[in-house]
Image (cartoon, rainbow, N blue to C red; front, top):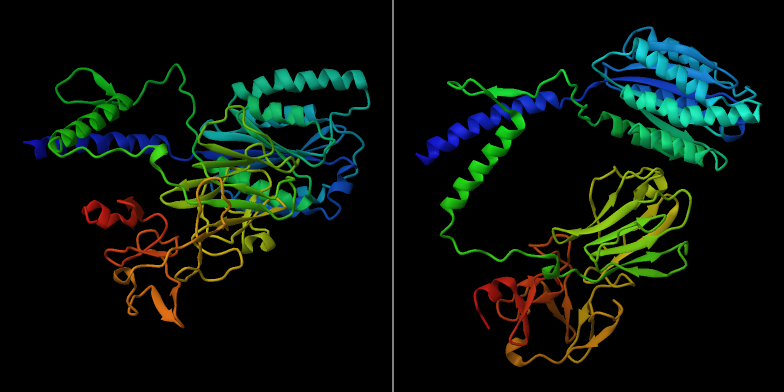
Length: 496
């Protein structure tokens, strides 16, 4: 009976999810690139690298994307109307357009260029496509008339931004210098659900376009118009339909209810909380001294790295501030999850780099966790740090050694540095290790911990042996019982 009910519920659930997946399919893209052709751009891009970056960006678009160009200086020019990217003539058109980018214009009429791009998208864009404007500039609005500049600033910030928002057009702005009107560019991005970026170095443009490409390719649900009704799944025998969202919630609730009834006789297990998590001692060293502090302890579940402190600071959060213009407000985080420290770039404008990728200038993908190990080199834009973790390696890179009556490098109590040496008492005869142990061997009267990774926590090296079962353990495997540190298995089995 229960099996039949579950199968019926799953059938309805799959039907609803299929409709949901179809609704969330990535839309086609209509993109207008708006390029600043004023004379000041030549000083910021003397090698005309923007041309190469734009061509690479277009190559990465999906086959059903449309692309168009507006070039501007004192006035805008629709250099290329919207055209299908895969059209055989489009490549030649794009090349001819980029040849027009010579950086010889006198003024910077940003509002007129944005208005021309909005007009082209509204007139010739596809109704079922997501519409975008990507514009690049190195300055502020400059028409040669100060009073007109102020009026055009207001027109762009208030009226044109609202018009773009109402038409569902997202605007992404890229500023080339510190003299650019960041407040205006940021406002356009925020009001239209787009974004803004700072390319203070020409070589950063490629990474910015990569970030924009990842953002726009993510499916974004469009607001439902008043004439549209929610998707209905009609149940036979009923005269009314059930909305997909309600059906999904009901199906999930029923399945969870059945599972709960089936396992209700099982003994409940304690749910781990943040306070229960034992975080290994780690720290981040400021190699270049950009922050003015030599190192930072990583002893909270989340460590935030950014240009300024977040407005809301959680008790389980550490903050590392790098007060540099090329660092994003929320640049990256180091999170302790699944018994590992993970580095995650949070969509930063100028990228986060790890180990070999620093020299290759290949940023790690945004929002993709990268597991850290002790000694890893990290760069936030150009500012370098080193991650160190107790229990994996010593600061000098040597293997850890344990001698009766000697010293061992291990994580110390809270408030003490990672490299503090702690006296170890001689072991009793019954506690001495056998020479056949796979993790330790006798060499000249001393016991050496052999290099090996923990089976349960592969990211951590074995540093201890359980005194009962002689299993190799990392710092996360040990629990205290009756004054001794034993492995989790012996602890759960009640062995002393």
